[in-house]
Length: 530
Image (cartoon, rainbow, N blue to C red; front, top):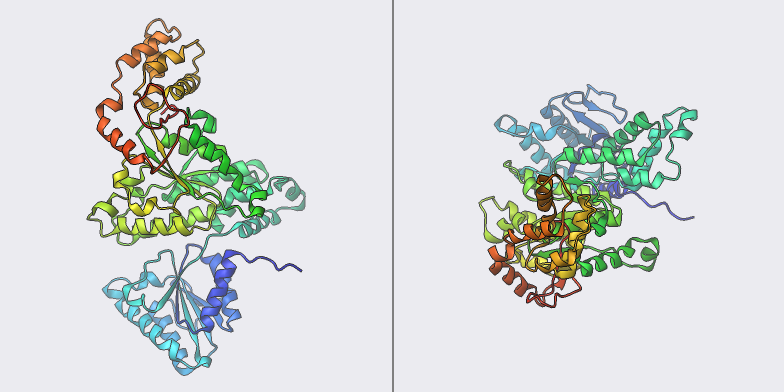
């Protein structure tokens, strides 16, 4: 009989059991899900032959069933800490695991300094007690910021979000409460896996709420409704930004055939056959190049092409004025990404977000810490997330970010060549609903030094001209006139573009396959409508 695979939470609970048997005195569990995590902690305590109890400032000490026990301590933190010490010293009562919910807030400031000292004294005392007097302490906290006085004593564990197996159980629980006649109609027939995928990345309460909302709105578990609610929940957390799929996917990006070919070829790694073969999932790409030539647009198109969500990780937005909160936000974002499974993670203009780590910044080392955490995560990430990072200024990029193992490859996005400019114009005309016959080759020929976004912007500019002239349809001449008055970026920032091309020689793959015969630039590159 094949052994049932354990969930991530069960594996962590096994670690707690082993550490408890090894006489670890103090656990600091980072989670916002008291109810779910406590169930696993109860199992871990029983496996270690310890009696689990909980404490909070509202009910005091309670047993596993939530029944209050007024004979032990009270609702004040010092009372429960003194009760633990008394049992440890006298051996009265059972060997126990004490799960303390509200303790972190009762150790901050001069008023509660004595509680911090009580806990530190216990952490020093408990490991040396005889086995029959063993008492373990578990502190539940939404923050991983352990007081400095306890850092040498506490074992910090960041409890994982529910994995697919746990989410499946939450889905079944939501269906089980329905009457029999409603349950069959509400079940996601043929879409169970999609319904589970839609909720992966949420905590247990959020997932249950998403499923419940779907049942209320549609009388069934609808993956689309769950995904829409998931988007709102992730936005509320303010650590990640959810982007809707880009219509058309990679077809909405003009040119960049070399990059598109790489993305298409590597998409097969997500198939079941590829996994069985042992093919590793792609890590991601770094896109470096001229501003306005398709880097960000490509990032949005990849998610559509791969059929997975797009999450933007804004490292700058995670920073906070409060000590430790920036790091906590970053950890929360990475944990959510890992739990979400297959997603595209977009790091836009990454060199700006990490500038403090390479150039020095008066941020107390927050940028340097973020860089270190990001590099470690990219190297060792266990999930199927695909990271797409964009950069305009390669000189500001940390060298560690460019080494093999962080990204699968580095692509250079140059100004679009003539065939790419034609493709960009065609996409832009379609996007704006223009049906007139346009000589795109003629327009492409006169926009040799334009970026992709500058080529695409000719269409709305021509539309203004045509609308002012009795709202007629645009013509090739309108586009040529718009091009004549455009000052391209290649003229205003020519030195920077030349420096980018010099850097890319031998360091990055060209994103475009074709090379403009009349161009003097390096392997050309194109961007779709901006």
